[in-house]
Length: 291
Ligand code: GRG
Image (cartoon, rainbow, N blue to C red):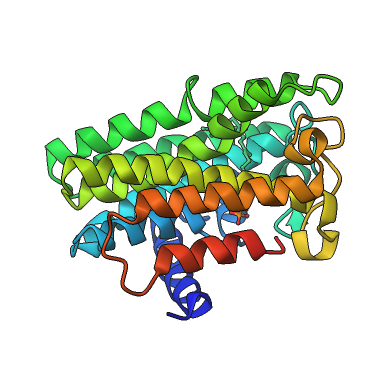
């Protein structure tokens, strides 16, 4: 398995679907639709959608066309979180994915509304998809649990409130597992749910996704220290005043912890007959990434 080819192929398929599902810039209100398209189509690895598709396929799912609205919805929600995360009231970032952040390009009001509209559009897409009603309900349950006050938003609140003077490992784990890993957990779980996998595989996907998401966010922390602005497509050293793994554990031990989470994730995901070692290659790719 050449993971770079795998990721490029799937990224292209996901990008095509995102383009298809986004409202046209000609449709009223044009500025809102322009901002939505700008942020979603500005790049991105599409890792959450690809993880969902991978878990679905490894769970025996064969109706890939049917689940594309869900994998696209996941990327719309992710883009929404990035637009809001970049706002002056949050991380105050001028650049994202190598281009101006949404509020820098369109102003704060439109950026806030573009984020809100992407969120609604995600649910519109899933609810209008051809997925069977029972599976849709289970998908909504996994998704809404991961992105609300007990998930991404909860993690983001503690992240915004955090400061580098309070080196609290428990709080750090809460922030990372909620603001980032809960979504990874949900996308893997949704892949298994939609493929109608047995409960042991659904639960292993959920746990494996969470561990994978922890490794991913720790690497994100490491990149904020070691990464280059040109490669990252945004400013680095933005988390200096935040509670991060490098702050609490130092860079070298953070790398060890990320590797450990990655091994634990693989142990959970070993319930799948992953002959091509896609999960292993994916994790190696994510821990070696430069952006
Ligand atoms: C939208 C559910 C929701 C909540 C809003 C703003 C906010 C509350 C949450 C922000 C959470 C956040 C931005 C976490 C950081 C996660 C992270 C490491 C993002 C970068 O992900 P990549 O590397 O980005 O996958 P690309 O550009 O590749 O898509």
